[in-house]
Length: 305
Length: 305
Image (cartoon, rainbow over all chains, first blue to last red; front, top):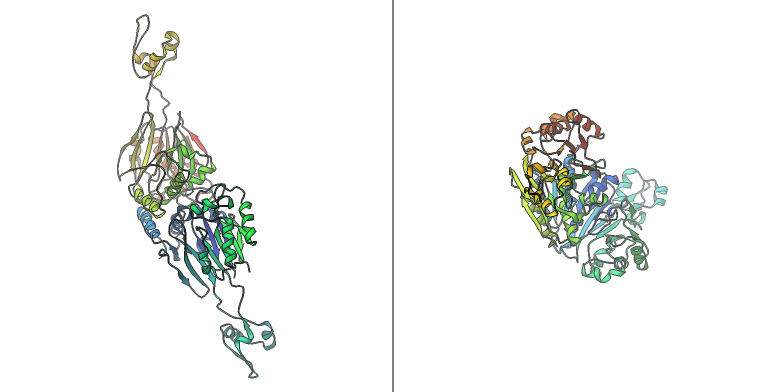
């Protein structure tokens, strides 16, 4: 299982030129996570055939409308589809009040449990962990409280050396226990230490979602070991000053963050409506960080090692 | 100037099959009114090239999400486009609280005046009048407080008989005063009574927007003299009982309201996602009221006399 990222919306504040407000799907295998939910996200999901029943967690970075105005509609649709599986929703505390007020106004009693996990301003740390993944968050510097989210696949099991398996042909139960870290004793009584017959996987997926933010190298330590970074790139070099004023980044600044973080892959998005040709932004980023990709509505980008 | 209605969204609760949630543009000539504003309305406006700067008033029928979840996004876009012209917004009182909370969360101080006119539950009466039009409202029977809106072009001036103009050739100032109801005295001293040389226009536009509602003949008196009625038609005859349970109407019930109201034209919309072929609904309505038209995204329907 590797992470894959589907872009549902690559626009910044104004939805224009066929570009929708921010929303991305992170496919971690058995579940889908939704990262931001701008207006029209549920229609984009229909268009790109996302199975909305597989969405288990939603992460909202901040409460500028282009990052969450589609959330109430999506939750309402879950309700109309009579969803019963819980949804975990992560976001700024006031989001709970907004949703409560909207559902009170529509007299809606959701068919499913909406487990809201408030992310307090300036909170840094782990917000979720199970046997497969860890999710962390840290604050970004934007005009209102904003958080990045980091998703790391966990190294839960060791892989067994092929040579050992072929030579010793261990039974199925032994394979399970070896993967869980146990030693192995062969029928002839020979001891095989676990570290000698297994190795640690090097292809664990990790992904960070950083939007919206001013260029801020102080976030680099939080991105340690992250393979793929999504970083907003609202502007090009031509608007570097404007980006700073608006607490946004340029494509090249996004690339600098990826380079400083030793990432393997950068995805840029959240493009200002003033850019018709996104290759301008892509080129500027590639000057600094070669393996940069454009977030484009409907396109999947796979984890990269 | 005649009224024209553009459908931006014809779906009921779930946006599917390329059908968007409720939103219509009423073009009254110099201004556009927006009737409901479901999620994605601003994208639909871009798609169908509606000049959003011409929108002066917005009317929200009720606070089920499919009728207003696009409103905050549209108002945010007005702000980002640096609109300065006032917007009048009519809707249930709690809508003000929802918008206030959202704009507080995004730290947005709108660039234009948002004049909110709360429509109290069960209020019946005139809510706007200028020299050209009157807007009235009355409650509909739905699951939460809901209002219909009626737009009537005013008969502000009398038209002068062509025969009289040709025979007497009155000066320009006299034409103005005759149109405003004054008598006319010719150069030869002959008195022409106003009622003998003018007539009342019979082609005044009027439009009523009735959604969402159970079949309710008690609304007919409020629709007196209305030429074109939009009435929700969520279901077909096959779901008449279900319509009643959900406080919605069938297409044929919408047609009955149009017939009882002596309307000239009926527009049906707000279709349930279960109907692929809308001609089923159209046929059932036409059995009762021949001049029925389907609301279809992107299609304009002109006033009909």
